[in-house]
Image 1: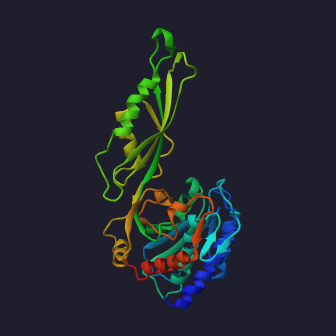
Image 2: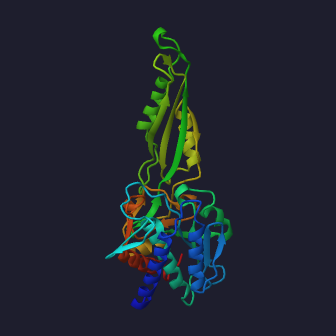
Image 3: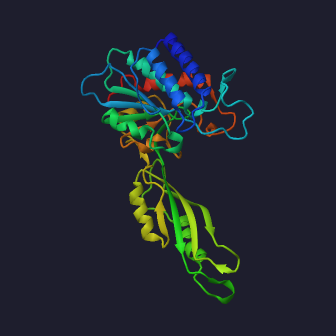
Length: 357
């Protein structure tokens, strides 16, 4: 890619990111930033489509029956934490660093993907049908985000999800299932050795969650991880509790679907187990996929990601890749380096240009 093309795309991406930072876009309130993204694409001669706060665009330079390649990132943000010493909505540039809420997660990935899309859409012909979608509600795994538009895009064959990965390639991602568990006993007076203590009944289940290892271990993500994170029981000191409630955070690997794992758990514990959702499954891609092979040939580091993204809602092969560092996400004085955005645009283009799958 000519240096001047990359410089132009980089400059336009940075200016769009500054505008996005300046425009609050909390989950389910992303309308104004969707307007900015739609206007950006129209300014560059594209014909974006929109549903709710989701904006997507199809490159026209593809052969009939070409497989669909989806570029996706999100434009919603969490609310700023208390520790900010800068204005989270003022895009402040200091040297190579751009501060602002959503700059790292995932504004830099979103604008880099848009820039790469514009570059690739100008090529004579692509071996795939390229779609870019910058979507809403990722931070809350909402029903109105990317999942709501997938049926409108066609049969996607491959997705690249833009999230801060330090430009390493996440070829698998853990899923999430949160379980509300209730151990039931029988109330009684603590002084008279009456009742059936629900806390004691819960202890056996909690110990199982602490120690159990499921048989299928992922080469990339490792074993399923279960953590009891909340517990509540009892009304006063002299009453044996008849109910003990606890919450389990389950991080799944690609060896199990969430519904499958739920049934295995229910067979092993006495408590009533109710999942808050089973839709956030582990996701990934085959190690021999052409995209992964190309990444290897480029010397890219491959890894399994412990953090959740919109990949969990995609029932097709996907990877996660983007500029920035996951450790900066949701932190005070969040930032991205301008050089990381430039490298991100170049990395996306180099990975996707002439990719056949």
